[in-house]
Length: 46
Image (cartoon, rainbow, N blue to C red):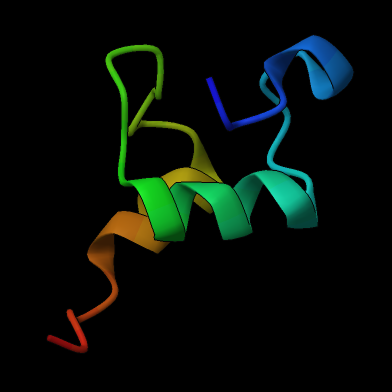
């Protein structure tokens, strides 16, 4: 819940990436997919 999968079927839309950043990953996130992989490779701002 919260990622909008029902609207974009897993494609990394801008709203999906915002939700991913806010909520963190879930088991359905494929870390091997280019845009998502790049997201996870970013240095943490914490």
